[in-house]
Figure 1 (cartoon, rainbow, N blue to C red):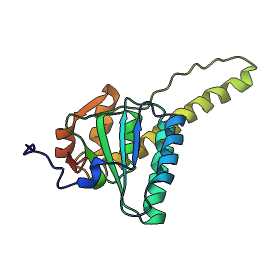
Figure 2: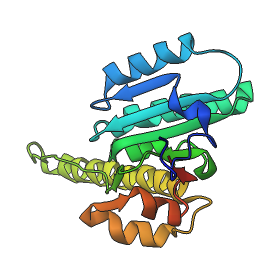
Figure 3: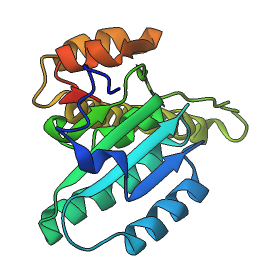
Figure 4: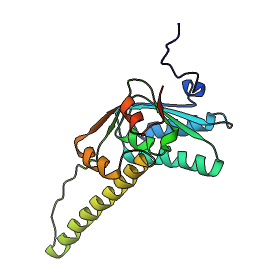
Length: 191
């Protein structure tokens, strides 16, 4: 007996993603991602699934940039399927896909938060150089915020969520259930 709420017939290709990623977003995941993309069929949409509790946002951005290049230079449709948990850097990666090319499986949760920094500034040296050390750290923070805001803007593009709303919710870890993500337009559908 089939589940009457199943949308499998509407999206049969999503059941067998070409690229299946799970675990921490890191260099190992990026290596696996690149290898699976090379091994994927060259025709039709490229389907990528992800389950992650987070990781390195720069590795997520690098994978996302590869997705953008595939879409823009190969003219290939790219589809995202989030499974179980798409947290932190996972949401960063998801933002590389247009909102109408994103799907979540039932029961999946998104978690979006601000980038984190753990840093110590040690002032040690001639007084005339200390100001430069502080300015360098402030520049690093400002640039990180700019990168974060670019990702946030990509995540909410074409959705019902404003950038301002996301920026207000992100500092306290915004958890979003799959159905709510669909209602907000962050994903096209829940499968």
